[in-house]
Every structure is written in C-alpha cells, then in structure tokens.
Length: 136
Image (tube, rainbow, N blue to C red; front, side, top):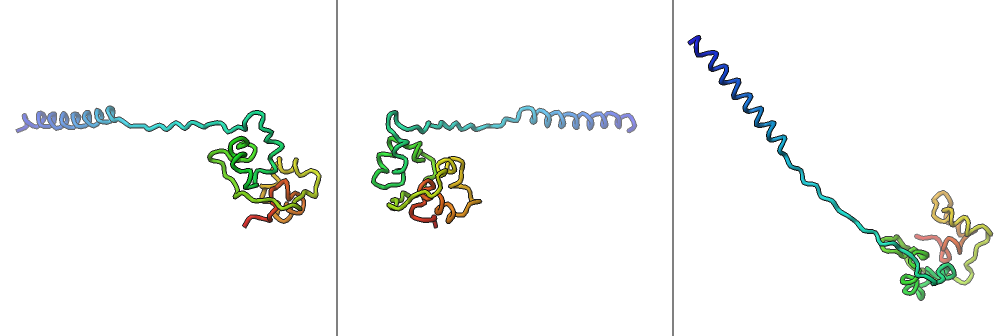
C-alpha cells in the first residue's frame, strides 16, 4: 500500500490543479455587455432678425407665447427641456425702482434665494418678472 499512496496523492493534486485551471479559464472568458446611450442636443437659438431682445418683456404674456416660442425660445427660456414659469400677464404698474436691475438680474439677483422675494419686488419687480407678486 505504500507504493500506491504517492500515485493517489499525485492524482489528487492533478485533480485540484485541473479544477483551478478550469476556474481560471472561466474568468478569462467572461463577457460583459456594455450599453451606451448617445443623446443629441439640438441648439436652442432665436430666429435671425427676430428682435427678441426688444420683445423680451413680452415673454410671460400669454398673447405672445406662441410666437415667442417659435421665434425667441432662447431669450424667453422656452427651449425644449427648459424649466419655465407659468405665463403671467404683467400689470401696468410693474416697474423697477432701482436703476441697476437689468445688470443685477443678469448676475442672478432674481433667482438667488439669499434675497427675499419681497425685496426683489420692491427694487426690481419688472426685471425679475414678479409683476403679479411672489410665486406661491
């Protein structure tokens, strides 16, 4: 029986090596599927010669909405995917009391939560498009 022990031991070691070899082969042949999604963004621009800069005060007027959406989407923030406010008709007494409102609005005054809505109405009601009050 002493003669057969090394042969059995050699057979057991060979079986373990074969098992490890098969497991390594499985790892080498593993395939991973990768899915890629490509999104094309269409540029949102105003129509040429549409004078959108002169019409920007009408962006929230319901009467002008269809035309402005077609010709001035960038100026009026009406691009597909853009977050827009519900159109609001401006009141006749809607004015800015501060002379720098256009500049402040361009720098984020109207959207910065640091400034209270009541203060924005007091100083830059027209530029911040708050003619009908603070949003609820």
